Amino acid sequence: MKIGVYSGSFDPITKGHTEIIVRAAKLVEKLIVVVLNNVNKKYLFNLEEREEMVKETFKNIVNIEVKSFQGLLVNFMHENNSTLIIRGLRAVSDYEYELTMAFANKEISEEEIETIFIPSSKKYMYLSSTVVREVALNGGKLNLYLDEVVEKKIREKIALEKK
Ligand code: PNS
Image (tube, rainbow, N blue to C red; front, side, top):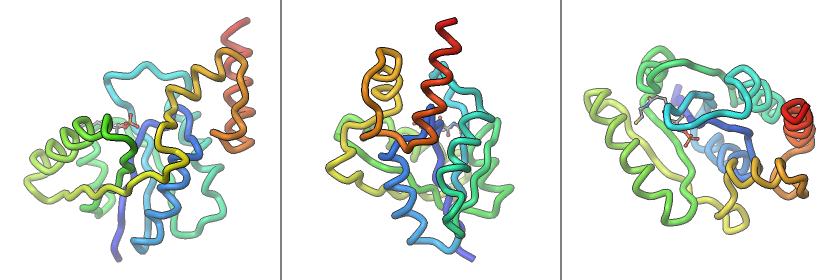
């Protein structure tokens, strides 16, 4: 079975991620969406909360499985019998970061792991979790960016943080 892995930190999952993941799931028999930590980021939601939101988002898509993992993505891939990473590519600014990760993952997996990129749709080209958090923290509209359940979670989280 061809198993693909879509990796990310999803803090929180946006409609931009969702759009790419739904397209990615059509290219493989099974797509595992794995929620990981990026050492360079400080998160609003913890790993379990992020995983929960991603699970909720894809609960009706049969060939998508959602997991979380602490550690290297290549180790996760090995444990889950996959050699294919799928990532979304937005504007040119993503390019260097994405290539750096793709090369590193290929090298540290002894050339086993391949990364492919799906171009984001124009609509979500400039959407990021960072923008979403910024808008949310300042009380802006989020329905263009987030599914309803995720919007509710971020509003609750921010209200808690402000207490
Ligand atoms: O959504 P992000 O933050 O761009 O995703 C980055 C992520 C979490 C996929 C990346 O940081 C990652 O794979 N982290 C796990 C640790 C790892 O394997 N790092 C090596 C890749 S250079």
